[in-house]
Image (tube, rainbow, N blue to C red; front, side, top):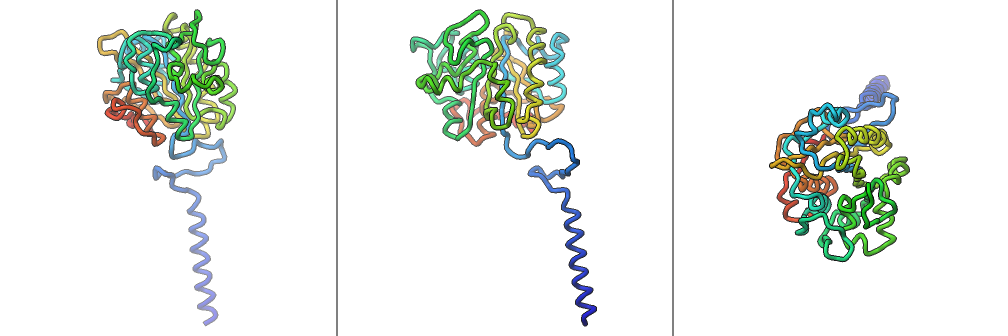
Length: 308
């Protein structure tokens, strides 16, 4: 009798040991298996932690995609996800920047500057939605001389800084100065996963965004700046998304390039659905459980086919 009891106990202990050994591979939320190889930590599964959007200028997709003058951008497109039918929503620049960040052009049809009150977007906006959801955000404008600058300079265009058109951002000077900053601030913000805001909007200057300078110049800027984003802790340790797109093109269909990169992007993917700037905003809102800001965004097709 004692031998039988001891034998049963040994069998139970052996079964438990086998279960423990097989538990080294734990299903992730996607159902795949992960293992510890002793290398650097892989990005966290689940929700997207950070979204970084870079907006270039005034180039239709046909001028950029496949262009040997833009080897870095095209390399990202081949390695990650690109949209083949992604269109801007208007002309000129400013209405597109407002569409990306508020879900509407606000009836603005020119590249006007915000001071004076006649060129403002007074409706809901992404900054307000992120604040309400407890998520952080920051606008990084290259060559902007000081936070919240509303005057143009030879390299800085206010029309490429949409958050300065939202009175709910600019009404509190201290709030504005902490959220709408020169691009140089990004270097220190990339140092940790907590210092980089959940949402970052980057506007290169008028030369580096291809507005006044060549495609090759813009691609060189991307090659010099994008790796530091993709190699930052937010992208090597968390599931984050980098988006590179253009405000508008000069083709009849207004199709522009849009590329997703980083650990949240689906690799080697070409999405053929019809998307717009509203689709990108909808994708960001959906990723963080935010309600659509406008009916235009609610009707837009989310870009989930470019995510993994």
